[in-house]
Length: 171
Image (cartoon, rainbow, N blue to C red):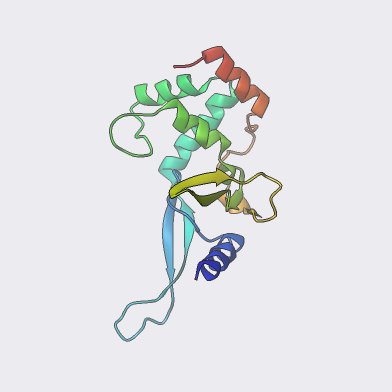
């Protein structure tokens, strides 16, 4: 059963379907079969990500601010100051780590990556281990319609992001 589940999730990822949870800036939309079954309900075929324009504007703003030289903490404080609803919506506001994860997430660059981590059992304790980028079990699919970075805005280089972290220092 484990191998069948793995194979099904790999097929979903390679087809550009959602093989994980929610992502800020997108809505998960169920694709159902037509015609409906005898109960009047359609069978769920798969789930796709649709761009949530309100949240996408926030993601674009984060990329713009970072490309303009602002660091994670300053971006988070600016979003909090302007009353932008954070990803969890729990009222605690934006955290610098949430901003950082958005800037590093491959999906915002138009790439779906699945199977980045592996769950292992060591001595009765479950742990999660990251796979190296060259691992052949990683599934990476280019999907240009999922791109969130606005046209004309450069992707912040990793060196630029590291320099921002050094300037701001630990919180």
